[in-house]
Image (tube, rainbow, N blue to C red):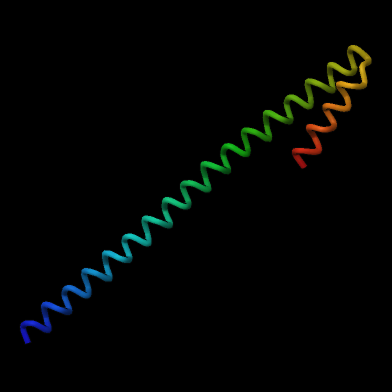
Length: 78
């Protein structure tokens, strides 16, 4: 009887420990995905700014190579 109670307690502790481990793994994955999302947003914003700058430069200098580069950057974004 006493041994059975001890085994039940051990099973409960093991189950709780496994549940906590899985929860931590999910939280770590969420954090990783959020970090990647933030980096992607920053990259998109930077690429968009570069495309805008190249388009402005193309308008000012009437050089179509800058406009082509600007369009290439915009295609990467979408």
